[in-house]
Length: 275
Image 1 (cartoon, rainbow, N blue to C red):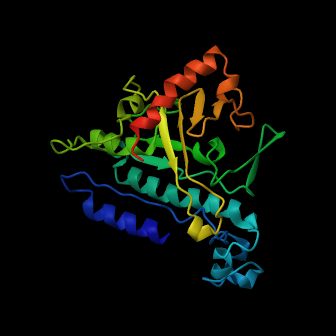
Image 2: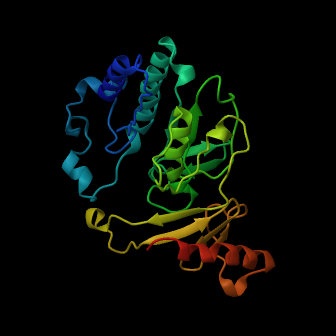
């Protein structure tokens, strides 16, 4: 709520300027510690910054990694998260700013492993935060700009974080300084329903925060993926269409013709990336 109040105040001050405004909002919720929200029945008995008053853990206990978090309030936090975003979208609509404002909503990583959802009544899908499978890296991306982005459309192009800067610049009608080097590609044309310049592959570099977590067995992980294939720098290849959860690694000695072609196409890309 505090963040949203500040953003709305900022927009009130900037909405009539000739220059485009920009807001980056890294939301604190939904995130551990899982705590009640103002809409939770337990809110009145909640005494921050410690939630010991409702039988849970203190912030220090949350940080030491010695306990299993109870996702009791995860649903409440998701619902309140949605409610606060709704406040901002309603403000944009009420101020007549919605059609001139590109809203980009992106998850930063998968949900915690102890948060599970039922899909199609029979399949339980659990989060994979900290994992390099789709459970940890394939996150929601929702864009809104009425009048520019067609409603109720799904785009399957590969998008990575470096693509946001050129996309925002194009939407705002801005140019990069001469000689400015960017790695990303604007997906603004795709948002408008055009073909654009989609990626053929994406590169990932995962550097675990071992000193913070105490998980010294974690190592640096690098991989490249396209729509169908995913190749780790250590040699494991996965067919994401048949094995999205990466249960069956394919090693080079086992490659079929199509697997070998995918490996030979992706493997040279590692040498293009800076160590």
